[in-house]
Image 1 (cartoon, helix red, strand yellow):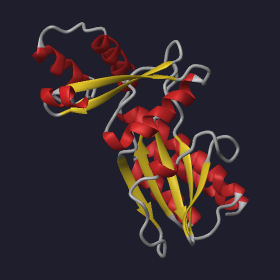
Image 2 (cartoon, rainbow, N blue to C red; image 1 turned 45 degrees about the horizontal axis):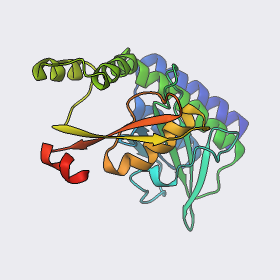
Image 3 (cartoon, rainbow, N blue to C red; image 1 turned 120 degrees about the horizontal axis):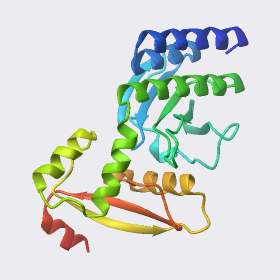
Image 4 (cartoon, one colour; image 1 turned 135 degrees about the horizontal axis):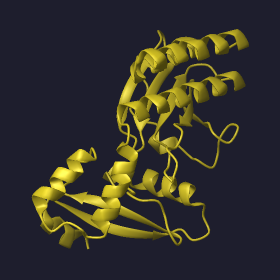
Length: 232
């Protein structure tokens, strides 16, 4: 990727955001510019969008297992070799603030080794995708954080009200949760939460609130109440 191509990508991304083109269009813009495949995932590594240029071939369904937040290019973009001839760069979407982790992740899969300018392109698209996600769910991060704080405090006595408020925050609750607390004393809150969330993602676990006092709270969904007893 050249400096002119990077500038053109920035202009294209700005136009997509201004026109409300969405995550798929942003992914396609990067795929075209970098000549690869681009995957967009949410904060729990769930699929949001995929686009690719010709010749990329089959790519992984998620970058979750290769992501290491403490090892990156320019401190932001993680790099990995998936297999012989397939390279990947992954950039986190900007945080919504207030101790929250990334809103999601943008991953580029390429058959050629990415350059420093490609890493810069990743950050441009990640920032634009962050704007799109914020626009799509304006107020959702704050609503979810408030919901989880109330949920963990046991403020609901009526199940129907609980489900209604969860839906308003964009959350689908399982029959039960199994809670766990991880001791991460000494680690930065955002880094600790990202690491725990990444580790428990295969089990559909979530870290609903920002870490406090060196501990990360995790919740694991249980389909049936009896599953909680068996898990213990």
